[in-house]
Every structure is written in C-alpha cells, then in structure tokens.
Image 1 (cartoon, rainbow, N blue to C red):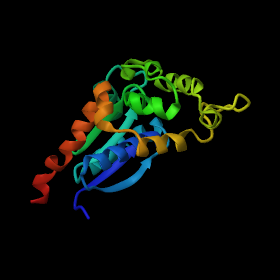
Image 2 (cartoon, rainbow, N blue to C red):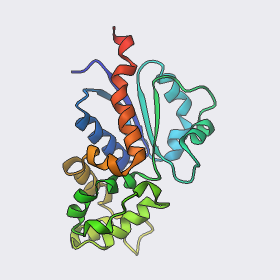
Image 3 (cartoon, rainbow, N blue to C red):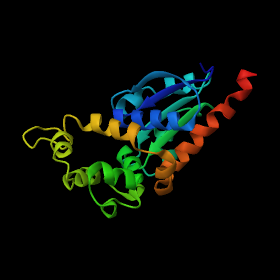
Image 4 (cartoon, rainbow, N blue to C red):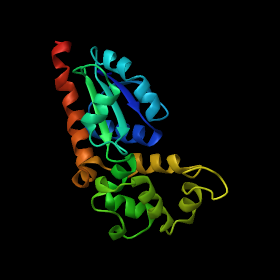
Length: 206
C-alpha cells in the first residue's frame, strides 16, 4: 500500500477512466481518494476553492475539458479567485476527453473496426471532439457498438445508453498512454505532471 494519496476529480466517467488508466500504466502506487467523476464542469467550478485548500495537504488532480475557453490559465483564473496551491494539478483535455481516446489511433481503429486513416491525426485541434468521435462510431462495422454508443434519435440524449461502458472497456483494455501522447500535446502535458507528483510531495514524506 502506498503512503501517497491523490484526490481525483474529473468532469465525467470517461475522464475518470482515462486518469485511472494512466495511473495504472505509470506504475505509481497512489491511494486514490475522492469520488472521481463529480458530474460536470459546474460541479467542479463550484468546489475549486475547497479543492485548492485540500491541495495544501496532498496532491489534487482536477481534470476537465477546455471546451470554449481560450487556455488553461484563463480558465483557472476564472474558477479560482486565489493563488493555486502547490499540490493542485489543474489539467485540461483539449478540447474534450474523447480527443485523448482518439489519440491512440491504431487501437481505436481496431476497436471500432474502421481504417486508421479515418481517425484524426491531431485530435487536440478538433473544435468538437465528442461530435467527431460519434461520427467515427457511425462509420463502424460493429453494429452492436453503433446501437449501444450512438444516441437514440427518439431520445433527447447526446450519447447512447452504453457509451461510457464501452469506452471504459476500451480505455482499460486497449488504450495506451505512451502511444496516445504522441498525438495529443495536452495528454502529454498531463502525463508529465502525473509522473512529477511523487517528487512534488517527497519532501513532506521525509
């Protein structure tokens, strides 16, 4: 059991799955605390001061989407009216977590049964990563995935009932961060910060 705790906060289940997969693949043993997915950007913003206070004690990794914000710095300044604590790792999936999923192009092509050439080479630059990802699913030869991941046209939902379930299976079973980061600068920055956490708090454990 590790003596290093990490309080994890993510916007949605996909973001939580990605961070947990990254932690597993990093080989770092964390005691992961917190609920993980807190249910949206608004919930994270409303608790940023509390997360920042907690980050004075041990690392707090907050993952949200950039969406329409200009840059990570401007978003953090808007959400947090006080200096960020040393242990606060505020990370953004640019512009949505689906961009990180698409960054491992070979694995995703196999999962969706589509040519790798159909998957964007620079997913961070997509203005609507989720929308682009849903378009990839529509091209899939796997009818089950299309049925369970795409939204029902008769229901007012943006994704299918089993969208997150299938994505979690992909992330934990096939997605590899060291391959994906080659196509996603925002993922690469988050990976680097994750690996720095033990060194960041090593002084407190001495």
